Image (tube, rainbow, N blue to C red; front, side, top):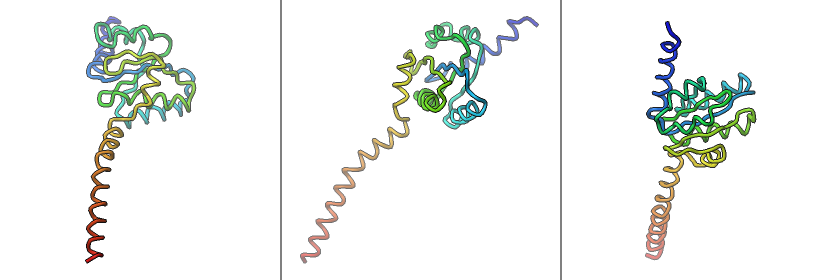
Length: 164
């Protein structure tokens, strides 16, 4: 069997991961201990993020002609890719948070919602709360005036009863 035939399924797998991904972040994982890598993978899995280590040439072949093609300039040295198909900021948020406690993990770059970000850009995006957090904050801010209004009405009603 030729080498190309062996590599083709791997390139297809990478293409499938990139296909419906909202975000893809590249990291250099050199220096992580097995225990740290296991914790990182567990955190990513719990948040629906796919984390894989591929050969740079395979990733390079898979992203040709896609919106993720700009990542090829950062494919040097050992590289792992974190894909998210549901939450665009999840890979950046989890990887940057983990990099603070494990300095060996180095974020290289990423493409989030079709836009390329360098290391600094990915770190900035990692500070954006998740979609669920943003929705709960919005709901809380919508409910707050209504709850305050209801309390005022109740106090007025109670004061009227006390007067009578």
